[in-house]
Image (cartoon, rainbow, N blue to C red; front, side, top):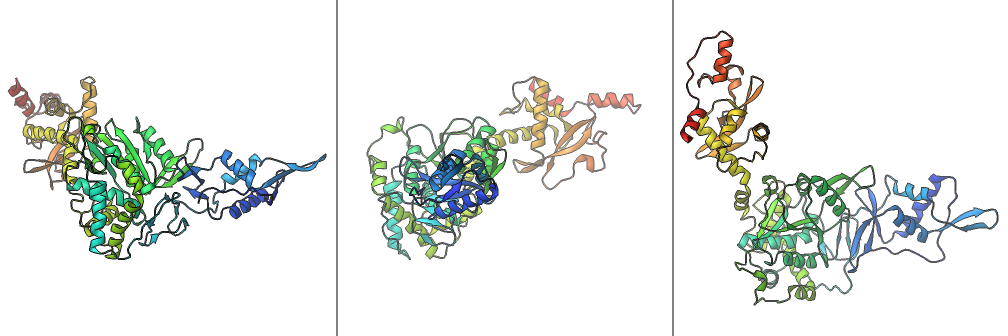
Length: 554
């Protein structure tokens, strides 16, 4: 329930000039708890929050700041202070009391992890249909005025499932230009996940709705899903310029206890360690602005992003589920012939039917014994098992069918390194070499290595750091699996070599001293000079593979 503060004349009286702060804080909490039934004050991340209605009449969570708490206490209690002339006169809630109440380490308020405007399934599979706070699920169900839900069958028949599938896949999603079955299955899974989020123990991936050009329908799809799941608009978050900005925006957004978070219109490459952590963690920890302490917030929302052919790093690629739209039209916004020319008007008018269809498919899965899906994604095991099971019972094909294709398309970094490793192997085989030698290969590699625009020294430094990050990573060059391995230190410089997968012993650990040349190759010029200085045997130096390569290129 949302905030309802008593304002009658029977408010309890509290002394604003009571010198015993502990007693006054205790009395204040007694007043708060007495007024918090049904609950409208909660806690999230250990901090108190309250629920109020936004401009659309939907319940939303707001942090309980000092100003908000002072206004609340002024209405909950009749505050008085004593004067010699007039006795007890009206007073403001003392600032010390306001601060102490907010600083209470265990406020004994009900914990809130989500606000829903539709019936949803709790953790054990029961359907929550009664409005109000559900302590077992830690959810607040607050339907908007006028919401009517048709009956949901306890054990849906094949006809019930087919009817629900038809209204969702055909009437709702039928006009979106999906590029394949996987895309349509992922769009439906995004919608259904909002009703079974409490049954998913793991985090949920970022649903990336991508398209080649604007006007294809990505934002419209998100609006339609948000209207069905939340009864209103989606919580929008624009991309950050750097990780610090990403972190602040994620913290601010999660403090609102959202059901759905949209990162709209990606323009930069999606590569954020903060967002990566939020997508794969059950909790988010960060320092709240203005408060020198950490807050720990549960992550129970669904994540969505849109963009025109967006770019993303390999680290983000494994956290994405792709929904690609392609109208194959120069100006897709000028298309016509849709089932519902104004889709959002139709969704709002039929929201009850659409919610009932979603609940029917989810309940069919529960009635079938909650079978788990067979396609599993690392870090999102529970999500993939639950959603795969629901779509299998609903007989919707394609779930996770485009994961390998998406990873391959997103692996631009891997393609660059595979080309570099192939040239490295062709030129030097397993010989231990330093960054200086590898730099000569890197500048000739195609596609080029990302070494920056600095001078040669700067580029060699970047290459050395990149090799460190790629240490022990395996690349396939034709039928050969090669691993980048550290090969010890020579002349105070890190050496690197390629070894076959399974051959985990670098040259420096196979009886060849790190500061001696490998017997498998001739001495370089610098090594020959060093040998001469040390009085060793003079070797007739033969061209190195790199010099052979440079000679061939000239």
